[in-house]
Length: 364
Image (cartoon, rainbow, N blue to C red):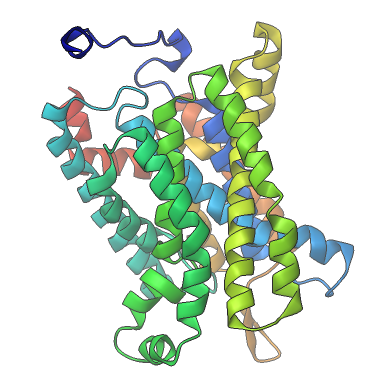
């Protein structure tokens, strides 16, 4: 036993394309798809209930934001060392940097919400809260991260629905604590749901998207989770009360996170593990999405600014939806991200947050 304890730790070799500081194109592409999905959810005009158009648009209702949270967890894992977590001597400084980023996200989210007053719910303040809650958990062993994230994911979405239906939470949403209540339980992006999803992403990064076996197992397990959608959706359609809605919501959320994991695994596979020719083609085809996903804070913030300026009044009701604006937002975001990444590099807001948090100085 002593020999086992004293044996040096062996690390699996990591391909050069996954070296420190290199981005994973498949993860960036997944984040880019999540951004486009949120654009659709925010800007696509409403369609007739039961129509094919409404069915297609419903895909952008919940899945993109969960995919965004999943990619955020993966990104957090990669930022803190991936399969080789940051050395204990550097963890306090890394947590400090992330805490500064979280505070900046919280502040930016509040500014966008209360100054611009867009019709769409802003995601960034909840992101900041979620990052702060994740700080103590960042360097848990990877089985603990996965078990905690998956276990909470089974419970948390339904619990949020059940709590949101209570008189106490409804009263709180109408009172002075409305912001806290929305952040943690009853808002569009409740932290009670987001933290488990991010934990799953963090665990996946710890197990290693650098490893083909991890990507394959992640994809298979994720596809198995998608099966939960059928009974979950049936419970939601039945409208049998709060309990059924809670169970149905948890099952559907589990399935949607599974779909996001499967998509991410597929994108990582096609951009990393094919032949040189196929991966080159995949990266070129996905480059507009990858460029967006490499600067999500900048692209997301810019789209909130745009849609807040597009509000109009129709029949006495504020509206901001438009197919033309949706197409322009998607095309403009892709063009800007591609050009900025090619000529400058890191996104402007990403670079600013990195500088303020001190990560540039730490890296130097």
